Length: 215
Image (cartoon, rainbow, N blue to C red; front, side, top):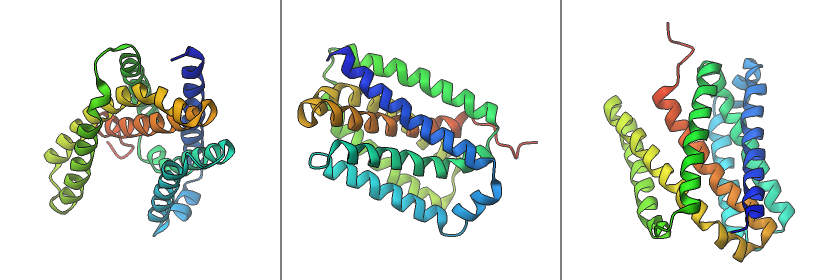
């Protein structure tokens, strides 16, 4: 695939991450506002809206206009940023920056691997999806048992799955461009990689993040 197309995808990825982490940090400067927005049922509503936007984008991407795709992507990034404001309150800023850099390095390495490898990574899609589904179900079950060791094991497995998804989604980018055209393909490809980055970041934060509540 042309380097120009890769640059479009990563430009949109940068925009999405900037919106998420920028809005999360700015909102965290106003803890009372965070409590008002995400208190009670607010957090659940934000998650439901987030999922609805993601599903709408995924299902309607072929029929929607480029501008609608961009709007959905940026809206998703913003809503994620609102929920991320909690992380800026819960974790030390230096810890968040460190984990972000670790995530960026890991993401970059496996994105490069996915772009240059001749291995049939496209065949891993069903295995990655089944693994992701398994850890979601296991995480829900673990909510009732509260096993810290099992939770940590799920976190590590999740890291491996999303590392796999990074290489897999990079390999799928030419398909997005063929199916959706250059503009929408770049936005949707960035959205897929954005999800990989955010999920990898959250799991690495769970492993390496330093809480503000630590003595």
